[in-house]
Length: 190
Image (cartoon, rainbow, N blue to C red; front, side, top):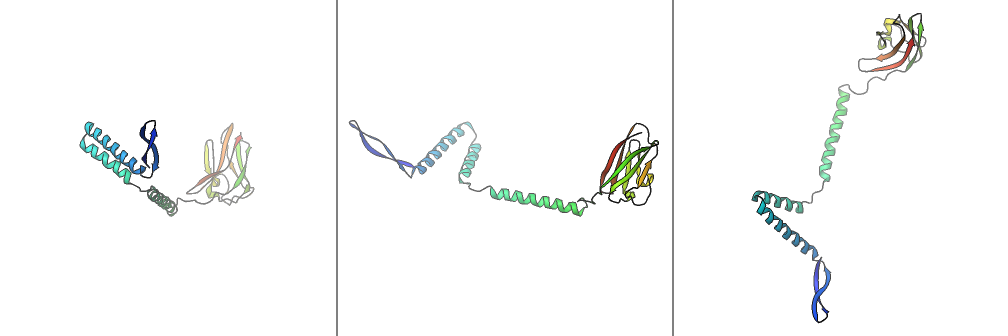
């Protein structure tokens, strides 16, 4: 990208004003940048320590010569991230933290009966009474405490004796050693 001068006439004088593009301009610009850098180094030398100037010179030269891509660094980071995520997933299954037993589906009817609350299995899965708990305002117990110890199927009921007066919140909860889920809930007025 250099320029070559060609003589031209302008009035009675010969001037060198016509310039044509030359492929050596890149070399000229690089030489100009180096001279500018040398000037900056000289000014930097006047106001700062020689060690700092040398460090700046090394950084600038390294920047001009460094043509490494960022891709290898990103690739390594992604490989480490994938390895960590994979190790966490495997560890969760090995240690039993993965998905547990699926909760059953069931619905219940809640009724007030002479100051008591009657909870009746309306429909859904047959349930093990050892895993079903009835909880509410001022009471908590297993299905076996309030009903029977046989399998809970359609029409099975449990009676909570006189839990109080007013609006009583009642929940039927399925619970195992590693998970818990509310199957149904209601507010009963006594």
